[in-house]
Length: 340
Image 1 (tube, one colour):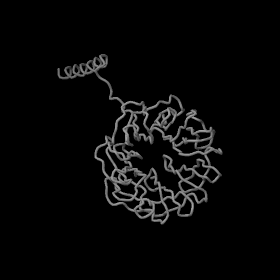
Image 2: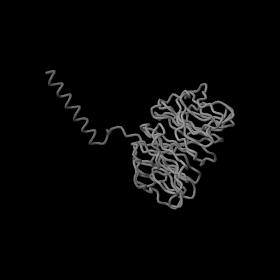
Image 3: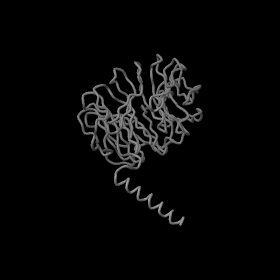
Image 4: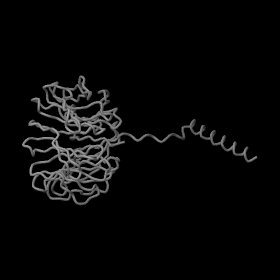
């Protein structure tokens, strides 16, 4: 009798679920929409906002008469680091993804900029002028003393943490020209990777951390290059005499998106890292630039001036269906995808 009752209970549960499905009263939890942080002047000054990748749900995160910019998501997508001059000079701040709990991390009267998260989200690297020249510092993401890890009388700028957290790449003019260096988070084993008399910069780690994309003037114009993480094997990705800039890796590491003047104005191109013909994704007479891939690799966000002001657009990774997601006459820039 107990077994029969158990069978009846199971069948009742199954039939109840089927009924709810038919009535549309039950559904699997909806997948969270892709989200972008960006900088907007729409409220009269530069603040941080978020918007869904389809242009819905624009939300203002910061409300201050000062400049707020350079949004960078924490690896878990729960916090944002950014730069603000709300205390009278550029400082590095961290806040929750909702815009709450804003904290000054750098806390120094000198200029502090360019925050980048360690892969575990515990530390922030940034450059600071507190020593009298620009140096690279590391500080706890929750606040605390910042440590100078570059220690050079010349300028050291724009740190980028490797995906495995073992290295920080930065640019330095300590050799008399701008080169790309790496160091450990403690400042040990500082190594010049590029060793070239030409201008080098915009270093970007590949998703697997084995390669670094960068720009270089070594061939007579600014072009996009890729090298191994030890600096060997440097090669140009999409040779052309026009200016190419701002390389961005696809999440699978197979492609680089970049901006190029090879059509006469700035356009967003992609090219296979292994070699092959670049493809113009934007094909618009206005300037399109600053591409950044969605975490799933299916879309690319970029900045465009095609509406007469700077706006944030999102398109398919093949250039299809570009949509204006910021939709405002104020200046919008610096799109940053929230990690998955």
